[in-house]
Length: 300
Image (cartoon, rainbow, N blue to C red; front, side):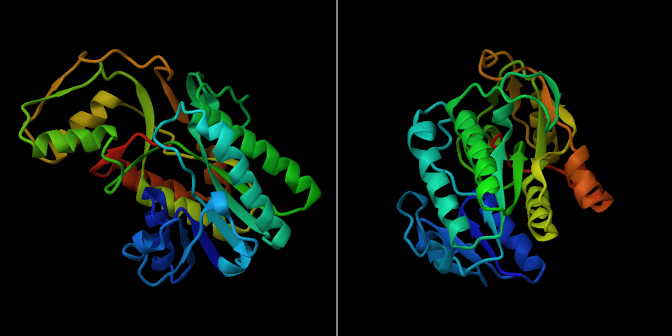
């Protein structure tokens, strides 16, 4: 099977390429900066490709893949920027439509839990979407347009709705990356909110395993939560990282107010995901969710 990956030099993209290589599959890795991608994509063929300036022969440049794992998205981590709706959404749709019209038969697209908006508790794929920020709204718009496109030009699609990811190699602005920076800088305390927010965290290696498994499954799965299915408080997450690394830094709880753009408690329902991929996926999620988390990123 021929596989292509966009956003190949990103946090999730690098993990997906590693998982593909682990399975003996060498993909076409697309990035806006091929030079940046080359250092993290050993064994894969790297091509320079910008979604916003997509060439007419983009499908051929991607190696005429059987399946595309589409992870590219610009403008992050500014989730509230109008860029996502005004610029990113139309460029993304034009790019993906062009690939489908050129012969792409199967597509796995990274969605986001931000599509659910201010909804509390366990979130399942059949719930009404109520995005509160521009990023979530733009992703919702892209999903709906791709569903419309499927009626015109049939292709299989999995919309992999990512929750919060943990692991080494993400943005310095992420919560636990900031904690790590504070430790390295010799800080005695780390400022936090009250820390009682419940979130769904998944190791990026597990997310990559699940994304690749979905891509290779051939399912026309529609929307699938890619999540741990286990709520954990931010306070506990940070405390576990401090403990697992043997750090002595103290948490200053209540230093920041709780954000008003996210509900206090939400996590993913993983029933559909496990139904598609089987108990091996559930076991993999459990094993690496319970393992030491290392660096973490509250991203989607």
